[in-house]
Image (cartoon, rainbow, N blue to C red; front, side):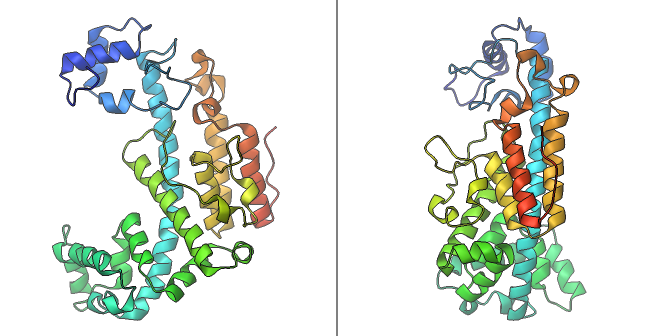
Length: 333
């Protein structure tokens, strides 16, 4: 049954029961739940967490209502991940607007392929297509308001983070370096003496944030989230913030949520943003670890266990923010 591409309702109900073997679920209970939330959203995921056994069933003590409460808890963290990624997105859009605005007033000028790298045709064709299709009439409104033009800042505002990263990627080297300089502070650039290394590290960070953002926005569980973007150990080791990254037992920097927090803090020059990130993260973990707020309490687990982040890791994040902005935020005990 597991390998079938589509399961009928009765088959889904039976599969749900098999995932919660010790909960004595009735078909009516499962039917009511799955009429309101999909099997995919409720049962899938958690494979890399302490909630599931190697055979795909949930641990003893899990029941349907508890599973939904954990799902709700996970949604709350996903919302934070998206919010944090918006800082990078808005920063990148502002910098790209500053550069591209110098190329001309209308898109026929600032999307001229001769202003970009030789490999730019595919990206520019896609952006032009977005303007011409004008699915939501955004650009026809802009032309009426701006004397027949679609200003670059207006277009960039209506593009996705992925589309903006693609646009950044086809800039000529000097323009690309200007954006890198706005994100990476001097001490990081001094560690990475080669311009190409600075740009490679920055691009890997953008790709990492994009993957976390997209997976969070499209319903992937934050708990046990599998990330495929590899962080570049060689380049990170040359930066002054290398010690703040989380590593595996072999000392290799890993792709996980904790390192997402490090990256968004590293890329922002705003003290207020870094402080807000720390505040939101600390509140999420501390509030949801209190017995009365912890849906995992009956399972003998905490929210720290769910995301494989501990208090010492959060203190390392605090150290990073304190060092980066010369602050004195207090540590967890």
